[in-house]
Length: 94
Image (cartoon, rainbow, N blue to C red; front, side):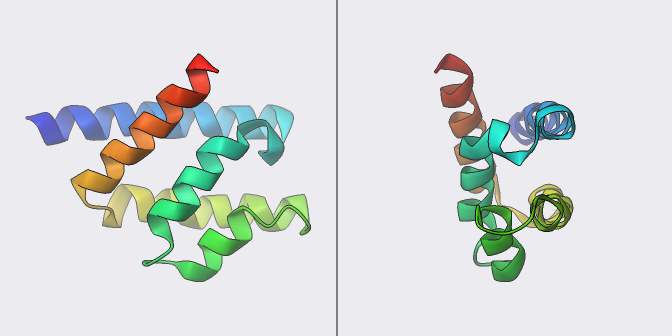
């Protein structure tokens, strides 16, 4: 049951992040994107690097977000999910 609630919370975070970057660009959620990149670096290193390449184009980061978003939902262990939830909570508090 704990896993289900963590995944539900993660889906909410990813949904808020997606809406925010559509409205305001990837820079608006740089902390969450950095946490996502760190969490997915071993599974999808290219997309993780592109997600936080601030010298690259916005479209490249948006495409990377789509890939990393899927990796987060499909391939991350519970430990990494908890880290992402914690990073998002920290950003909301800031």
